[in-house]
Amino acid sequence: MTRVHPDPLRLLFIQAFSMPPDADYSMRKPGATREESMMNYGLIAPLLEGVEWEVHPGPVSHHGTSLVETREEFLAIAAARLPVVREACESGRYDAIVLLGGGDPGFLESCEIGQRFGIPVTACGNAQMHVAAMLGRRFSVIDVSEPHSVHYGNIIRSYGFAENCASLRNLERPLPRGDHAGTSIAVEKSRVDAGKTSDLLLAAVNEAEAAIVEDGAESLIIGCSALYWLKPHLQQTLSDRGWDIPVLEGYSCAIELGKLKVRLGVTVSGVAFPQAPAPRFRRVKKA
Image (cartoon, rainbow, N blue to C red):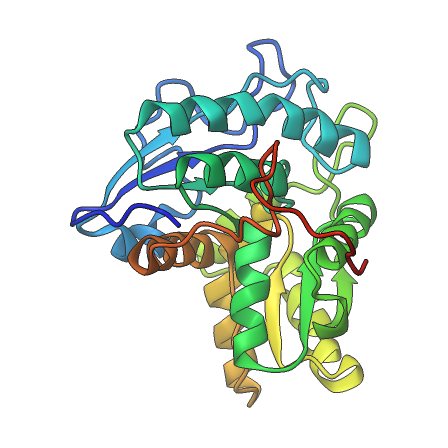
């Protein structure tokens, strides 16, 4: 059980990683304010009213100078983020920790650390799945690329949501990396913000509609955090087409789930995340 704190809640956001100075691609501009360092801050600002919050930039990347899509890259940044989580828990300064990044690197291991200190930890993908499962029986994922969607399928299974997942729909807009120029998602966002047409938004809408009609999706979640900005546009366009279906994004769900866990006074089950040595043990377990 976690400690119950009075208002204001104290949240720490931890980015998945930060780029070294010589990286080919920059995720956040140097010297950015905490608001500027949070993607799509306008979408989540109302959720942070009355909350004390900080942003950790995440560990400096050791997986290379590309963004993260493959198993190797996710594992590397997961291992690098765990010491940051542990240090934050040890500090006693925070009521909850929110892990940023759509693929949840290091989430389950971070929950184990948080349980030790009575501090709940949430992550974007996991939080979206829990909310989606409350809104309907089956959800579909709109994701960015082939390797990222394969990884996302893995975490869906590890969280126990395989039966709730109607499909993963891949837009195949790979993130920039040295061996692939990628389609500039930032350019597509700027076009939408300017009221112009966007091939990426159109593709997302078409895949979302196919997920509803062909796959049986009753809610939609967004995989890679680089696509979270699509949420309001995707929601509105589907509504205009007559679909009353919730579209979720990870930051909002992870923030609200973190706040809820603090209010309920829970972290994770100590039976599901036993400490070593465990005070009690079960002789038989089911896989």
